[in-house]
Length: 55
Image 1 (cartoon, rainbow, N blue to C red):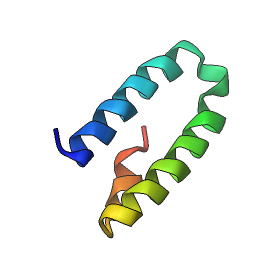
Image 2: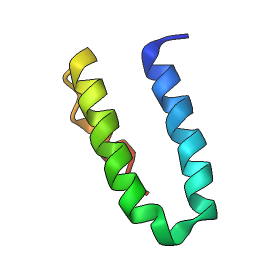
Image 3: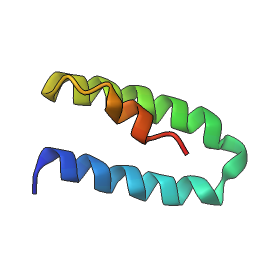
Image 4: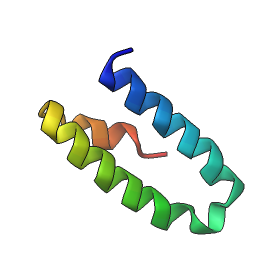
């Protein structure tokens, strides 16, 4: 499995969990997006990845 596919799976897993606790969603999403963007930037220069994580 490619690293990109893996991060997409992780994102969808977290997205599912976050829908269960919507009141904390904004804060957690901010942290996850920042972390994912940082990891993703080390692999490829793809700022569009951040845009795809917006609801």
